[in-house]
Length: 314
Image 1: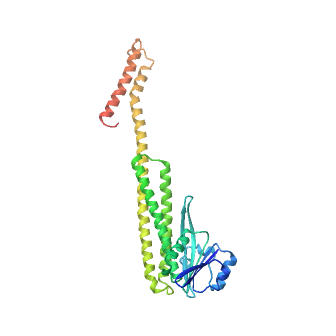
Image 2 (image 1 turned 180 degrees about the vertical axis):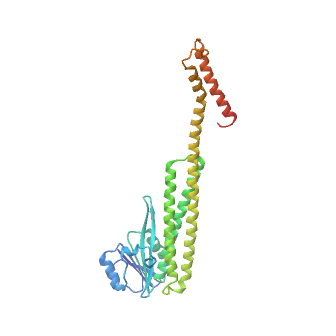
C-alpha cells in the first residue's frame, strides 16, 4: 500500500493511486506500508530515490542507521508496538529528499494514523516533508511517553498490592520482570532515536530553520530516558522488596520448624529414658509410671514454650 500526500493551497490532500505519483504537484510525503516489489520500484523510478533492503534497515551500525547521499538524508529507526499480546519492535526507514519525505515500513502503525489526524487538524503547520517528519517523530515520542506513564501506573499498583498483602506471589515477580523488559526496550528505542536525530541535526541538508524544533524533540527524548531510568529503579526496588518478603516468609517457616523441633526434644529425651529396658529405672515397675512419664514430657514442653515466650522468640 502506498499513500501519497500533497499540498494544495493551505490543505494537505491524500492520493492512494500510485499511478498518480508522477502527476501530483507539491508532493510532501509518500508513505509505503508493506509495498509490493512493483510499487516500490515505481516510487523509486518516479522520485529518483533508492530504498534500502529490509536487511540494511535493521542493521545497528551507525553507517546503516543514518547516512547522506546526493543531498538526500537516509535514516532508520525502531518503533515500538505494545498490545495485550506483548511488544514488538518494527523498523521504519526515512528518506528526506528536497523537502519530500518517504517512509518505508512493514505492517500497520497507530503512530502514522495519529500523525495524519494531527495533520488534518492543523494543516497550516505542515509546509513540506520536513514538517511531516518532525510531526511523525513527535507523535512517536508521545506514544512512548504514554507507554512509560502506563508502566508507572502499573508499578504503583504492584507496590500498593505488596504493601497491603504483605506476602509474595509468583505472578507478581513475573509481572515485574515483564515490566523491566518493556522498560529496557523503551530505553533502547529512545537511545536509537536519539542517535539518529543527532545525526540529522548535524546534516547540512536538513533546513537550519527546523533544527531548533529538532533540538526540542531531542530534549523530549532525554526526558524519556530519565523517565525510563526512574521506572527501572522503581522496578528494582519492587523486586528487592518482593525478594525480601520471600526471605521473610521462608524465615517464618524455618522459625516454626525450629521451635517445634526444640519443643519436642525434651519429651523425646524423657520418652527415650523411660523406654530403656533397665529394671532399676524409677517408676518403670509401678502402675502410675506411665502417667508420670507423660506428665514430665508435657511439663518439659511447657517450660520450653514459657522460656521462648519470655525471650520473645515466638
